[in-house]
Structures are given as structure tokens and as C-alpha cells.
Image (tube, rainbow, N blue to C red):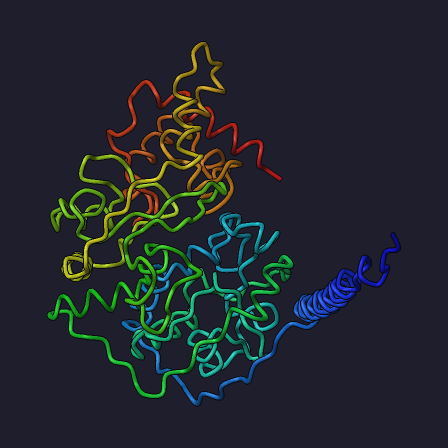
Length: 438
């Protein structure tokens, strides 16, 4: 029997194979184009930092002792002093920010904001400073990274107070030359700087703070502008709404990952009135004590990077409490950080050497949150070893630092540290101070 080969060998598979090859080629072309576009975008972000128009602001602030005093308190509340202060000198010549994640910046430094003309802000006009503080764009058109706060909602009078302080003869801002410390952004940081981080708009109209007698309104102003509490205490820095803070994800419900001076992750607290995971069971006095003295209702110290806000009056902190009671409660399960696990592990060790015991206590009482692992960060432990001849003097400082340095951010540990813990803790403090000396 003779078979018809034309019927036995259809052409359909050949046609399907051709279509598949065409589809593969088209897909590869599209993927290749995408890689070129993405690669080009990354190269552009890394090689060409963005520039923005510089806002021209006509402004000259009239100074007075009262305005300077208010500005100094505000510089502390806004953490300008905390971030820009050299721990060795106390002058605002800048420092390295170990708390910035390496994924964004392997080396982040704050600027010299003393009145030095060459390396500080002595040559800046009031208008240039105001524009930078409001928008984040400096007078060269460069955008500061987001760890430099923008102040788009700060009242004009408060901003003027801050500028008056920066122009004052206060020792912290006295003209001090300092070698510019050039930080660097990671590739991710440069991509975000180019495509995600944006300047803030300069206010189109004057901004007036609410009267402190209107407690809820004034508390809202402190939370969103004068203290910017909502940034750390919402869910994530990446989902903050700077223009309408209440629209930020997890507004004031905490859960954001912040970093202490040792670079350890700390989960921000829930400030909503939830009774189980927030401050719903706290009284106003409890809240005022926590903010101004750094102690929770149970007497335990609040861990850094949360700082003391002694420069805010009890009335101001009370207004914040009043506002927080109006915020919708959010229930956020507490998260255990890696650092807290390390502390628990350290507590359980036995047969420790004196040095290890001191290190364990240093971690247990949260000293590394401000002093870092090396003892030189926000607070410089070299000063303790240099200044105090006896351990009794160091103990007195730890118990009641306000008696030695009014206005210090160091919490008063009083009776929080067990008497037997002081000798090994102080020995470790001295060890860090000596090891860190140049």
C-alpha cells in the first residue's frame, strides 16, 4: 500500500516552532531593552546627582536674648544639637551618624553648622538657611538626604528663633573651623535620591503656631512640626506623608525600625491610646515623666535613640498627651529585636570576667544606645575617664547628671542601677574611655 506523505507529515508543528522562536526573540529584545533602560537609569542616578531650583527668600531675623534662648531650646528639641554636636567638644561641627543604615550610606556625616565662614554656615544668609530648612535644598541646589529633617510646618516665629540661635554667640555655634567630612550614599541611596526623595515646597503663606491653651491643637503641632514625633513613631519612614502626616501608614502606631548609636535596631513605640500595646493605660503624669525624664511608668529607662525632651515644658508635653488621646488607637503586636535577644543571652552567663560583666551591664542598662559600642558617639566616655578622678564621682554623675550639667540629655538613673552593679559598670566605662583615646 502506498502512503500519501503529504498527509502523514503535516506542516503545523513547523509553523508553531516558528512562532515560538519569534516570541522568544521578541521577549529577549524587550528584556534587553528593559535592562538597558534600568541600567541606564541606575548609571544616571549614580553618576549625576540631581539639582533643584534654589528658592530665593528675602529674610532678615531680628535677634534678642529671648529669641536666642527659645531657639536654643528648639535646636535641642529638633535634635539639631544631638546630630551636629561633636561629642568631644560639644560644638556643632558635625559628627558621623553611625545610626544610619549602611544600605543607604556607608558613611553619613552631619555638617558644621557653627558660624565659621569657610567650613560652617557663617556665610549663609537668613533667607538661604530658611529655604534649606524648609525644603531640604541647599544654596547649591543639592538635596539633603532625608535624615536631615525638613521643617515645612514649623511656625515662622519658631523658625526665626532657630535662626537667631544659629547666629548667636552661644559657645556651641561659635565659629569653629572643621575639616569637611564628606559622607557617601550607597548605590541604593543614590537611586532613592534621584527618583524617590524629593524637596518640600516652601510655604506659600505665613505659618502661625496654635495657642498652647488649645491643648489638642498645640499637641498636634508639636507632634508634627516642632518635634516631628510622627516620623519615628509611625510604621515606616518610606511611607510617611510629610504634607499630611495623618495619612502616613500606621500613624503614631510605632513599629518603625530605628537605629541607636551602636547601630542596633530599635522598634519605635506605639503612641496611640491602645490599652494593650500603646499608651492607653498611661496617665498624663506618666507620659510627661517618660518624655522629660526618660522613665516608663514602671520605672525602667526608655532606650535610645529616644532622647529626653527637657526643653519642652510640662505644659507642652501635656498638650502632646492630650492630642495623642484623640488619635485612633492602633494595636501593634510588640516585636523582639536582635539587640534585646543579645541582652537576654548576656544576662544568663555565669563565671564571667570583670570586663565581660561590665560589658553585660553596659548593654543591660542601655548605655550603648547613646554611647555606642566604643564609648564615643552622642556621649563621649573619654570625658568621664579624663574628668573624674574617683569612681564615686562617676557614680554620682550616672545617678544625677542634671546636678552636674543642667539640661543634659543623660537620664538620671538614680536607684535604677543596683549598688553592686556600679563597680564593674564604671570599670567598663573607664576601659572604653581609655581604649577610645586618640
